[in-house]
Length: 83
Image (cartoon, rainbow, N blue to C red):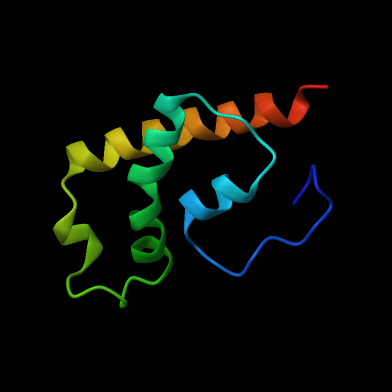
């Protein structure tokens, strides 16, 4: 990982990666990461789920999740740029 200079574990679990990182997040960001985590595998491996992701996720939910993801990425950027 960037701050620890270690390779991250081989997992797609964003909660686990967050827990192992040296970064500190507020409760709202941690909740967003936990909500986003299950969607990663489905989006990365669309055949892994029982349904097609584009049929199982509403447009409204997708927009909300994209906005949450943007907020999390911005927060990570702030954490990484902090001294």
